Image (cartoon, rainbow, N blue to C red; front, side, top):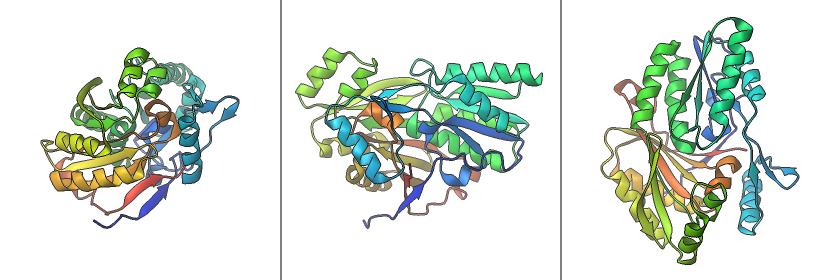
Length: 315
């Protein structure tokens, strides 16, 4: 398979508020929203710091340097954007109603911040304009949910229709991935550090699944080829015509191979390859690779035509 051209995209938000719609969207930068949705989706940046330095990644080289620092033992820190960031984004949205998509509250303070900001805006305006939804997923899974909801917003759909499609997408989206090491996710407190150390010392690469807010292990592998085989196996029984986001953290070659395998075993309407930004890569660590998949509705398939391009977010 020939390598797909790389298209660099910037996080949305620069033109936020330029277009008046019945329903607008807000989410966090971890959703990796493409530029064509910048007038529809407001993105709240989630900061990453190493020591006194705030990480501001704008190109591939800076992202590689970030992951090199992680491999060398430097420890990044993340923090949730305060409610004021969400509140300002809500205020600037001209839409009649706003849908805010967040990652699970038990993983981050993002959901709490968004809900507090929504209550504050309601007090200011004397009406409830913002609906906050915990999507039960993150990264590529959140990205897919955001994309299908944004399409409806761009078509002028009102909140009930957008919310109905979003809730179905939350039920149906599936995400699978593999970590090169568990030490980074252990730092976040999401797994026991002792178990992570044992796994890393045995050079085991766990393959995980995430859906409906639930995580679980689907395989243990030792090699990159084992990772690809395990991830391919998870895709064989996925139903419907799929929109897929393949993600990686400083593992582009492995992600490209995964994309090729998924195209062989799935009915793919569109597939994008996405480099995880630091807010997600901090927790996965370098070397992570995986994908999220969402079955499309009949009227979404033509809209999600397969351009054959791999998409890399331009930090």
